Image (cartoon, rainbow, N blue to C red; front, side, top):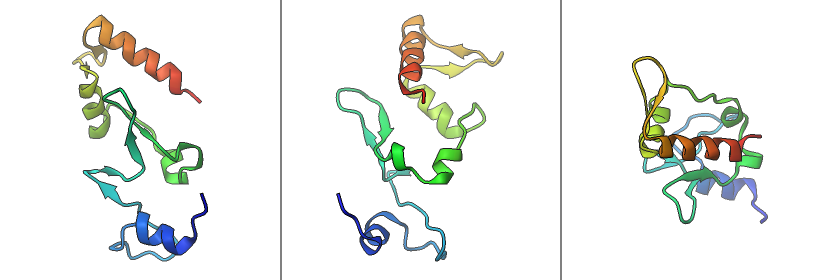
Length: 104
């Protein structure tokens, strides 16, 4: 798919961002516009992962990030007071298998 800069800026960046050298990707429903539902699941994934911006590449998940804790909740999981992953063994297993499947 060919996409020129003007179309990209119009359709995918937030016009409120004051930058001219850097741009802010639009959000939809509180998430990146490039985050899409994975068919047949309740999961989402980045549809431009292979060409994602450097900031996205540099972003590191962690238990201190509210978006990560929210994501764990969608798996039926949480971080316990000891710092361990808590949930049913089935949910933990499904989550670990998923993590293995997306490792680069």
